[in-house]
Image: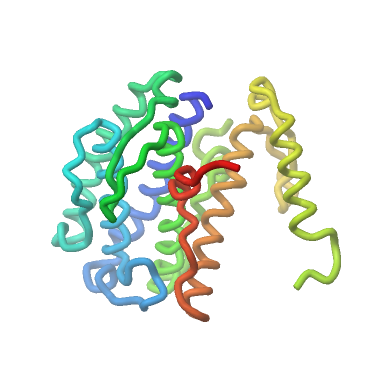
Length: 168
Length: 88
């Protein structure tokens, strides 16, 4: 695995998140806090974004060896705009971390305690991939929730990102 | 149930053989292809390999929600769980 691939993956991650965040930001507080059913991982659009924030944040702290062990969620953010402003800061910190990596870092083992209290050890490279893959899962849910609320959002696929944004 | 075509298992075996045969240099190889609307594109293979997994994660999420609506939440397909499992 090459660190260049990881950096490209995170450029995609930021683009896809930004795309959905911008649309969700225009929906208004009532829509993003509306309960959309029990078949979602989290019942509201704001709660789903809060989960993505919590996951990206706790993983970044685990990679840096500074995890507090508590994953943030919906209740930590009074509104979606508040979440967005915190998100922008987290995204910058995550980008700086990814930009600072070398190929050698990807095979470094990361020891962490998961949300059930079980200690695990996984190499940094797969964990970096995990966070983007995890977000794609929940972005899919967000896309359907946004479709239910206001119509289908634009595509967030990697091929679309490469052909329309990076153009290469 | 699949009643025609070669089915998922055969495709998966072919995909796996393809991926197993790749060298690092192959990842940078440019692939010319036409999108389903006929538009031509040229992209390095690594982008398209990542795309296929990412694309599937999006739709697995939809399948998970649909399964949840039908009979309750399916087991997690989170990538970190896969990497935590002993290989074999």
